Length: 528
Image (cartoon, rainbow, N blue to C red; front, side, top):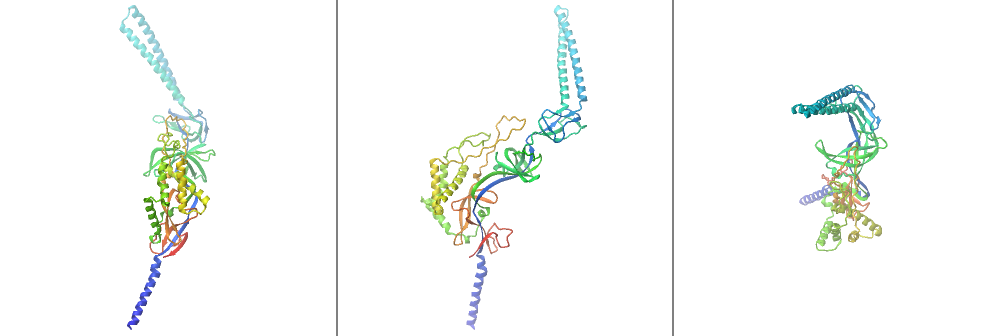
């Protein structure tokens, strides 16, 4: 009996262990990987905003005299020339004012003549000793006062004539009447401010988009950048323009600080109209034929039990050799990153900075670290592509890295390394009627290389373990990120997501449209 009980207990324990490892331990180590590929292509980074289309120059036409509108010679959409009569104010009272001022002048002239004759008599009598000095002085004072009164009457007459001339309204500029604010018979009062009669747009073939960019994006906007936009009237057509001005005055909208950006637009087809709403995209950076990876690949944090820890040992040993002066592959890569970077500091000047000074001057300066990094990343990729075309797949990763370092260091020593100069800036056309005799303030240009950083991408080795690949990250268009690495090539498979059968999800990049418990996309299931 006791032997039978012992055998039963042993069988139950064995069965329990088997069930535990099958249903619990196995499920805990069951992982699903989601993969994507490194691709090569173009990238564009945009700043989006909303603005209003306006004419480059528009003038509000008013009046300096009060009265009743007697005639209108222009209406909405009328094409007028500078100096043409566009309205007439009733001049009945103004004509009478001229007549009254003319009569006042005649009276002043008569009084001046009478005082002149009286002064001449007093002067003659004083010379003969027949009159006193007091009477002479009184006559002289009266004559001089009447003479000044005559000049005042002349000024009054001139003012009345000018007011009469103001009753005729002329077009101050050539253009199109886009607004008429009065009707015939309407009384306009110019006592406190000039009433609005018309609004004339100078040239509707040249328009501008006045858009607001929030403070988080204004740093990436520079004068001369290309912008595209759409309007609701033509939803399938894209219009293009150029950033011509970034105004310094802040505009606070719902507690968000914005800055006004002006975009010049060619409207030769006359499709755009003043007041239209434009949905603007400003191209702030672009790159062609670069390596890129999905953004989720850089955000992945895999569980430690699927990571190849032997790679970490190799990194530690590489750091040890570098600290001991070993000239191995790790030391060569470090020379490219640090030693070559110090040599770039003495690279030759490239001339002017394209008007990037505070007052728009073209001041020569040494190129900074950010521009050097931009050149290094571009040249790094060019050298790598040329070596791959020459040697194919016969070189190992370490040999490839060493050859790249050798080529770039040789170019630096020979002085053949020429960093890219920033693009020249475009200054907007002067506004009609404004003679700007002073230098223009311009904010510094945006340098995309200033946002370069370091990142980590995960790949799956032959043993089913994940190992990291350290890369330099560049442009980010919201979907892809530019990467620079000697270990990655176009078409390489990388891990962008890891899911476990357990309760804890170990990837942040889960597809919301995939079935429950799956990451979606290209997957491989590995059971530990």
